[in-house]
Image 1 (tube, rainbow, N blue to C red):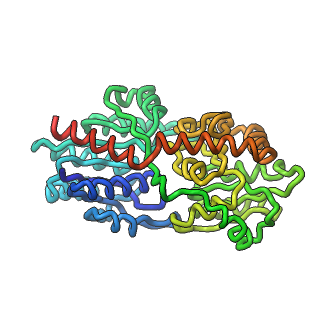
Image 2 (image 1 turned 60 degrees about the vertical axis):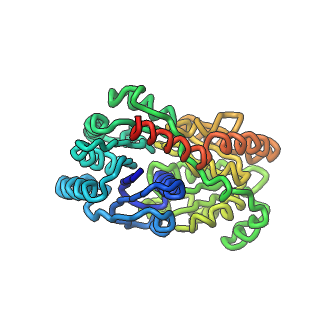
Image 3 (image 1 turned 135 degrees about the vertical axis):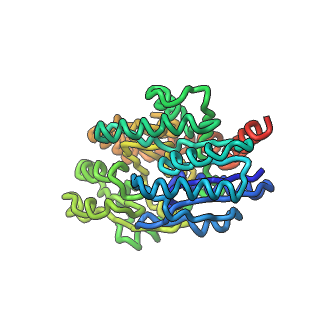
Length: 383
């Protein structure tokens, strides 16, 4: 098959890692794979080198920007229609919200020769913290785009439920395929624990709550800083925030930063993430919006217990009391209590990790994801 993937930006994020891993596996399986993407900019990092190494043919679409821009969006639509005609794919697979709308519309207009169109919902583009107008706009755009594809993929059942609830698409149009993790790349590195702590001046006997992800208002960094003063017991507790983003200035201005127990690492190479996880006693992800959360999967594979908010696809990874701990969204007292439960009892954390690592390896491996994707493609292209 000839496959054209389209994604908005190749930043260091879950949807992007998913897409690049898919491209690599499909090239290795003998398919002709193309990847179109918009301009990469900002402090979140880039997966451009990983995309090049995947073996896919890359196409930068300069008008495919993240922000809503009628002029740029029309230009991106026209560019993607041209690219579809030039590459003549058997299947177009779109990812992320903006590319998902524009690419589906463009590919659908070129489908007279039997082209199939698929879209993956990596995360909900609408959420409760949006204005009513923006929420209605995004739901309307998703309804429009859902009519312009042959099939939808959701990385968690919660995505399907949200789309059905908002009357965007019927459940029958979905296949749930969890976002896959390169399991072999994430293994415990206990030998790196002290070296990473020493590099940032974190005491070796301190308890460390970590967070891996771009610095974004929806990722919950502020909530962790809010509860940091409550996390002191018979030990000193530090925050290790791994990643960068446009929200950094607001985080640096938070009052808890004055305690001097928070480290902002900035952008780190993806291959080094297990080193940073080794320095943590617990990985926390109090997100207000989340697709599946690859970082929680990665933490469990690296032997780190996890705590998250009960939102989006996080419960598919974190089964409360079995593979990690969950707190209600925005409930800082419950977040603090869950973190303290794990920090105070390393044996409890170890039991959560043992079950969590097995759960992730069984349900969230890249191999399983790629097998399911190619099986779906075959059913659509060769019914």
